Amino acid sequence: MNNDLLISEINELKRDLAFKQEEVQALYMEHKSLNKKIDALQKENHSFKQQIKQLEEEQEELLNYP
Image (cartoon, rainbow, N blue to C red; front, side, top):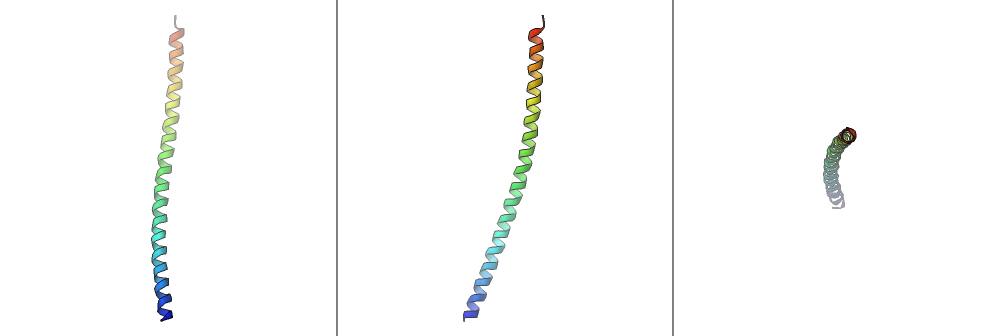
């Protein structure tokens, strides 16, 4: 009887482990996706900052134009 209990417990632990592995894999994929989004947003932010700087320079030129 004790042996059956151990086997049952081992099988339950194996199921729990498999579930946790799937959970970790899903979290990894979500993390990877979010990192890609962060990278894209940082590039977009940099581009916007460059555009703002260019517009400020153009504005300064227009204000200095006689």
